[in-house]
Length: 490
Image: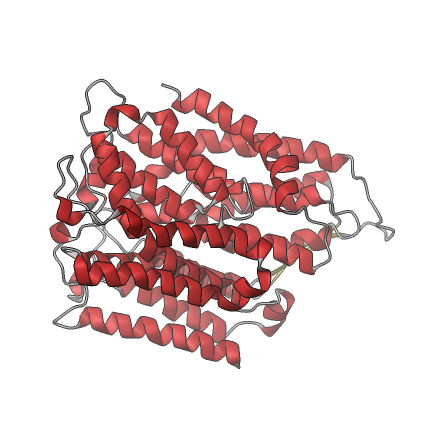
């Protein structure tokens, strides 16, 4: 009952926002050309549009606490993370609202992006939570490899969070009695991170880029070959390691059955959510804009997603929900942490973009790749992507608040003498933010979810330091170097 009330409150909140956007005095009625993310978008920026450097402190503090809270002060963080994230976000929002020129426009635009982001993440989470997959087979190298490959592919359709929640429990069940730490590690590598690199739906950083104006179908042709090389290489290593495990402690005879899906009707709901993403002329040219037809500037797509998620929840198969041990705590944590992240990263975006605009010659494709990757692995890849996207745009004298500028940037149509085309920078940032998110448990939201689910099932999982130094760095770093050498070294 508490869970139902919680989701009803979330749903009512989105209805309220949609109602505001539909009114004549819309909350989001600013013209697109006036919406600035803390900058003017040119090398010569007026100082009144730039925040003071100290205002970045809440952003850095929040990321530091996200990284250390679950490890060093677990009880405090578990009880108070929502208050911490909200308070730090309010510090920045208050300053922008009271003291920054065009600050209210910046805040309104940021709120739009947050609502779009959380609508997709939460709706996918709820709908996949009502789908229970049962694989009537014992875990073997080739079966496990197929599960991981399937997870990597569907992560691009239902997101890394959705794919991880859908597959982690059946993956553990088929390997019961033989599961080792590397089974969980490679699941995080492939399904929770790298697999989702082909579409904006796949991973939060790419979806944020799409919301900013990166064309929906830009990602796949740029990233598919690095994706194939990395996923194939990781699967090969995994199969070699898994072949050495044998049957482990399994004593029962081999089970040879098929795959059973409980709650299959939620696949219908899932199709509706994915369809809602495409209800945008920015995704498919020529598609009519429902927002223009209904004369509202924002909220139709998000409202559709949440209506579908609400319907999926109240009609969900109880067996599927129970089998998945579904609850709202993971998405609640994501919602609170990311509202803090979205608010506190506003000044960081502005300052990084301004710095890049005045230090363009010092920032190369390689520096963007490795800097984005390093921070994506040890902090959170979504805000890292946004910061370095702002920096890359600033290098070319463009504005992260202008969708037209971002489309030119993604198309490589921005002239810059003595350097490579602009789209290679976006490719470097996209690859690094998604791929390097697997470096640590805090690199991407599903990582900790998978770790916690495995730990609750009494599966042996590596701790934070062991994960990095025994698994992620030795296994992933060679692939990241290979991708850089083949595709990005200029």
